[in-house]
Image (cartoon, rainbow, N blue to C red; front, side, top):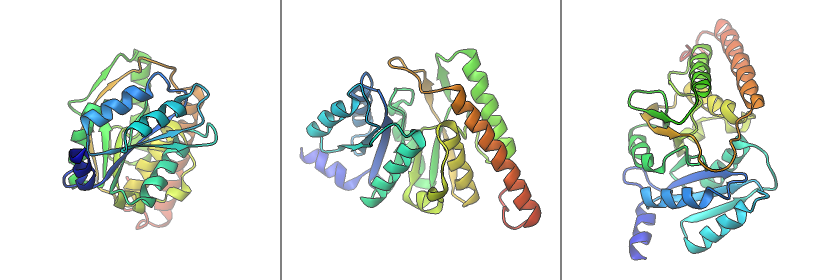
Length: 262
């Protein structure tokens, strides 16, 4: 018990206190597994399960985990409001409690907790770290060709439209230092799903946030149902196009306003 207390006090070396935010909706088959893997891979971090009132009892399972481990916490939300809203609520929860860095991680196991130490180490010299599926050294497992092509094309389009210098702007495995969250205009964020991750990448780039990518192993979920839908893809395409046109108009009017674009 003393060792755990020491780790909580010190946090991750060179980074400080870290909170891993895991949004959940109907993840009863996954939440205990993913939390256990996070706690094993990075014992110094805290975990926040942000549950959107899952009808399958995910929230109650998370409460049990929190009752057994003081480094696990639960944020009960009133209903299904989407991935972006859950992360924004998690960011606010972390900032109110003085965490030095916040991690985004999916509940379905596609983001391997075993990759987390490498992402946290990279955050010592960056404000924002993206666990990338499309940088050298990364691996994507068990995805059909259609999903591979969709993700690759979507990320290429985001890079060309927005000028964000990353290969995986839609990736949802990330570390944000507190300074990065302070620099991003989180109050202006309205998007969800893929678009949420792209929007934060765009806002971070425009704010001058130091971003780096770290290769990860990404695997398709084994339990539960994917939240991906044609509506999420359509939202991302529409928002990226809108942002790109808006940024170009702004750059044409004030060349100094977007010195980092493209």
